[in-house]
Length: 222
Picture 1 (cartoon, rainbow, N blue to C red):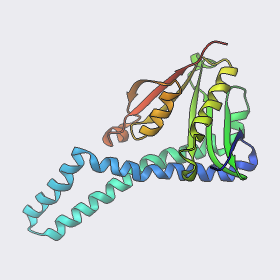
Picture 2: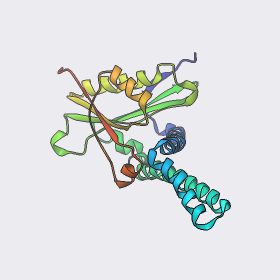
Picture 3: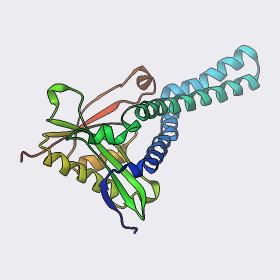
Picture 4: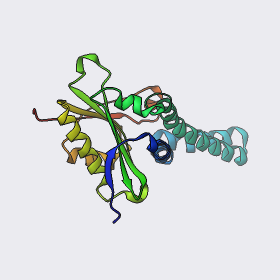
């Protein structure tokens, strides 16, 4: 097992961090596509749509073409969901990581390094609600390179963040994830996070039947 160490982000890490972040977000395209294929409404469309077209036109070629077009549409939807989130982040906090996470106390960004290569990242950012500033901090951008998964690296990254939050005097660490990240759910729950509620981020997420799951980890008072 290759050794790694966790440290705070430096500007020299920027290229590798962005590569890992974009790679991680791109992994969700296929995961989401498979999720869409399992939905009952998709089964109805894949079977009923082409069948109706065949009965109306008498052409199996048109029916097959309709299925191919539907599968392509589902792939584009899966890609759009995550590409939209990634692009928004690349234009905001990830556009200037040092400014977003180190210009004020209370936020931070960590990298896990192995043989001078960034193989994991995680960050925490103060929540936007002014009434919760100083009380809650949000875990964001949790990614581990594929070849380093299953080695306890993700758990170490989250523990580093939790210790930072305690030292900063926060009462809770919060995070939002989706039903697609079941392995991550077990990790977070094993570290003290509890699931509180679910919601849909937008009409697109509702159409895709992907609710957002909100987790909270209470922190002991110092």
